[in-house]
Every structure is written in structure tokens, then in C-alpha cells.
Image 1 (cartoon, rainbow, N blue to C red):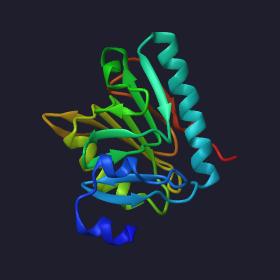
Image 2 (image 1 turned 180 degrees about the vertical axis):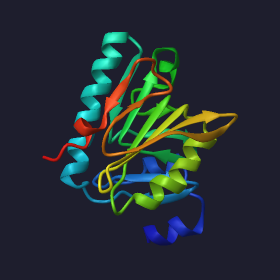
Image 3 (image 1 turned 30 degrees about the vertical axis):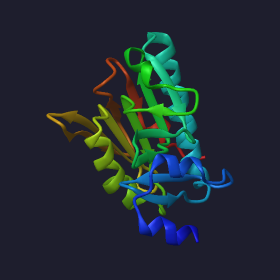
Amino acid sequence: MLKQNIQAKLFTYDDYLLLADDKRYEILNGTLEEMSPAPLFFHQIISVRLTGLLSSYLDANNKGILAHAPVDVVFDNNNLCQPDLIVILNENKKIITEKNIQGAPDLVVEILSPSTFAKDIEIKKRIYERFKVKEYWILDPANKVFEIFALENDFFELKDIKDGSGKVNSILFNNLELDLEHIFKPV
């Protein structure tokens, strides 16, 4: 019955609120998408490493707040995502509500999994761009690739891409340099 209703109309945030909370979902362009099972262990290790680095940087510089999945980011009534990590700058904290984030975070990070690869690099990337996320990081654990996109003239422009070694610098955060050997270090 749920599948039939999902395909018959555009799914909205109000519909999302009526779902049982035993599964995780996103709404992408009005289509309800069930989230994949838990990511691979290396995905989680990368997430923890990035969380530590970003959290330390944000605290030391009093720049903003970091959150990690699962957190609902409601872009509009037909687009709700649960990125791996998000950063909201202090000046944009008004988008934080008790239940969710209402609007575009300043930074969105997606760590690719085999089951989410296409969705993260195509559909979600276009949604983040459309709703004006300032910076988007895509990390590919399997290939040890780190890409940084920045919003320029309403479109994402690739600012940096590295594979496995070296350092990348955030466009949004001055003096935030990330060592890829540390981020992608095997367990």
C-alpha cells in the first residue's frame, strides 16, 4: 500500500512525518527513498575522522556547528536529505529547529557507499546546488578520492580533487587543511 501511494503522487515533508520511525528515508524531488542499511565500517571511520577535524576547527575558530547523520535537512516540501555531515555557520543558525534543519547548510559532506554512489554524485548534488549549499565535499572511500565543490554563480564548480594523498583546503573555511593520508588511513 505504501509503495502504491508513493508512486501515485509527489511525496511531501508532511507525508514523511507520518512514516513509522523504524526506517530512515529521504525525499528527493518528491520521491520517497528508503535509506540503505548501515554503511561499511571504513565509511564510518572516515566520518569519525572528519567529524573530529571539523569539530576541532569550528570550536577553535567559533565558526559554526557540525552535525552528522541522521539529521533531516528540509530544503523544501519535496526535498529532504540526510547528508553524512553538515556544517551551519553561526550567521545561519536560524535554520536550526528542534526537529530538523530548515534550509541549506553551508557545507554538506557525502561519503560514498556502493549503494548510494549514483544518488550522491548526481541527484543529491543537483539538489544541494539548487538550494545553494555553499560547499559540497564528496569522499569516495573505495578509490580514496576527495572532491571539493564550491557554489559560484548558482552552480557547483570543482575546486579541488585529490586521490589518497596530499592535502585539500576548504574554500569556505580559511586555514582548514585536511590531510588525506590521515582521512583515508586504513584501519
